[in-house]
Amino acid sequence: MSGRNKIRIAVIDMNNGVANQGMRGIQEVLLRYSAEMGLNLSFDVFNLRQKGEIPGLEYDIYISSGGPGSPYDGEGEKWENDFFDLLDGIDRFNDQHEHTKKHAFLICHSFQMASRKFGIGKVIKRRSTAFGIFPVFLTEEGEQDPIFDGLPNPFYTVDSRDWQVTNPDDELFSADENQVLALEKERPHVDLERCVMSIRFRPEIVGTQFHPEADAAGMKIYLLQEDKKAAIIKNHGEEKYLDMLHSLDDPNRIQLTQSLVLPNFLNEAINALQEA
Image 1: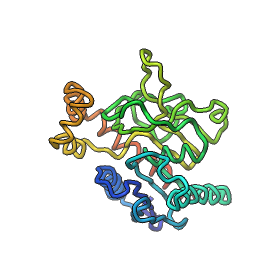
Image 2: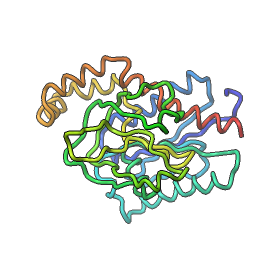
Image 3: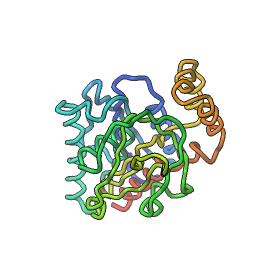
């Protein structure tokens, strides 16, 4: 791999200026991956919602972050149109180039926006905020998908959302282009559909509702802040709070997910570049 010219990655910041752990997590994964693989890899950050920055098509790989608020916040706004145009541009480029493919990974807010754009499922507000470390269940397609290689089924990850994608239209998903890769746990006692946790929108464009960049150390710092602790206990109870702290100490939970999902995606994207 190290023989290839520089690999250029665009990281799109969807946080709209709100303090978060996600951007640090993404950058840490990229820096660690680059060092471990001995790659000439560089990345640039584009602050899309706050500053209207959008990358062009000169990058090899795109990673777009989570962020606060509704996935409908940008309707009719230039920044949303720019984001959707970029996804269309990646699609067009991949259609026109048989061997050189650009890959994109979309997290949480970006995943919900892409579900809207591609017309997949219903993007709806949850009855209550989901926040914590939860099991995620792979579908048959997910078990075969390279981004989840090495993970158990279910695996654990950080989930933080007020919105969700549900009720995928079965007809859409019988097409080769879209595949549901993962779902939230079944809740037989609740009359609600299972939220979709991961979709492969295109062979080269994949997304997750959860946060694969989240790391145990960062989450622990976040959870130990007095205001965050008080809010979680108020909204979810002390037992849930203590369970989250306990989960962070388990190396087979979010540390495993962070060490595999985005690196697996990068392997797939970079191998495709190498073959080209």
